[in-house]
Image 1 (cartoon, rainbow, N blue to C red):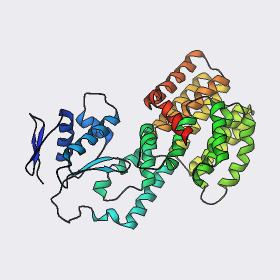
Image 2 (cartoon, rainbow, N blue to C red; image 1 turned 45 degrees about the vertical axis):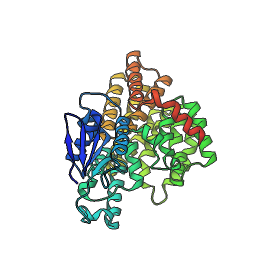
Image 3 (cartoon, rainbow, N blue to C red; image 1 turned 60 degrees about the vertical axis):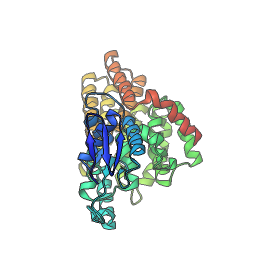
Length: 379
């Protein structure tokens, strides 16, 4: 099929049909047509079609929806949704020839899932995003689980709230993480305990909530002794096969809990030395960033302001480098509430308060917080 694109009148013609489009609908179709067969994320389409404007990603979805309605008379022309990434225009004309015959190869699918898993473990969010964007070129289909993880990595709270591509029960853990680390720890702790009691999550997510996520909430809610009790069970679980990659993060959380509990520097030094040894063997970016954050909070507790700020800034920088958007949110949540327990100089506290507020705004909490609460309460 050949499309004739009239840029002066925003019209497209094919197979004896003429369709009139709005200017941005036309620009979007023109870009996809000139790059047919390639997959583009919403962010990429915003950059190409709305370069000097500041629309939200939902703008792309709205325009795609309208284009599909207007073009449905052109049989075979299809704007495809590529799960977990974005959109691609398929134009008929190649008959039965498959451009990427490896797409349905089960061995390649399993291999790519393993690669995504490895990037996930090492905290290489940018690597995950890059690989997702190359699906059409590399000839594979993104695993449905990792298509959802990609949205979490990007901090796409809006998609996680409203998508119909993935059942809510499978998105619930990721929505809860946003919810827990955006409000008062005592209230979030009570909510977390309720979720645990009701066993609402799939088993792997339920375990992570019980042995790891709740430890932060106990600690920041002023109940570090309960976190220390729970840590005994956490270490029992991660001693089992398949949980070895949870060891570094659990040790870092233990250091954080002891820090808030008022444990002396001698014991903290012992824990610190053990963490450094583990990170040499498992140099996961997420854990390296989190470790720097906790060490910065330690310096904050000891009123070593300059060294504290240096470590906190380094930790936040590493977490930004991972490409996992929610990670800096979690770190800033820790910093924000830790500063309420161990107040630093006002200027330093304001610095991180402002960064936390800016991160919440970046993720759209100002407009999505109530929807998030409603979805979780309804579930």
